[in-house]
Length: 289
Image (cartoon, rainbow, N blue to C red; front, side):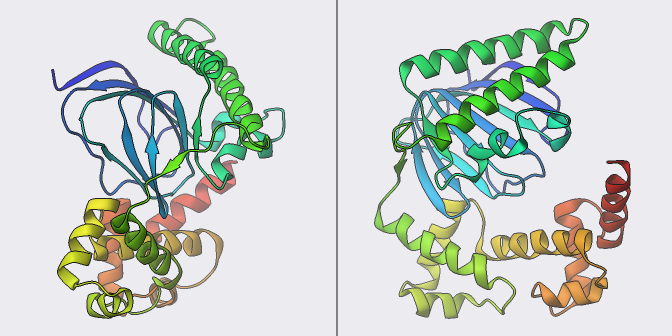
């Protein structure tokens, strides 16, 4: 058995997505970011989790919180095989909710996005996940409202844990020379992506060979260097298209592209639509809110 899907509901870019899977063979997710929030709960196995610019060792009974548009990747740790539940949701799932969104989304803004849970806390989360799974499977009248309520309950639980001093236990960051070096490179790229980026310059700056840097960067992040730089540039372009009146050519230059046609091709590859359609769609969504 390579993969056993216990329940798969919706898609990760929709308002609500639930995915419960067991895998027995090596598996890694690459080049991954999306416009919805993500909650990852590891039931069995061990995983390496790269989030933004850090690598964590995730153990069974841990919750992981991924913010919107945040680059992340999971990969095997030694022995392959794991069981996990992934929940994705949009802001629309929280509309009209109480308590305030700050607490509901607190876990997505913590310094560490990994919450290792104590046994009693694991029992609470597993019970809640089981109820979510049952409601999504049966889809009885009112199930959509119940899903919203249980999502809010899970977020409130996690938000309180994230806000408490000294609780839960500290997650383990993967701390070896390779991950430390790639973390340095990623943090550099996160702040300098709009500048010209050359592999030879990075190699000199971080005292590693170009070949080694390219290979290890992809192994840790799931991206090639150019894919990662393009991702950072396009994420910033999305923000500028949605929030400013700047022309597309001005945005292209601001995020680091020196060729408008190249910007358009990369943008469409990552978003499935060209920049002007993205801007039009986003503004239409704003009017509907």
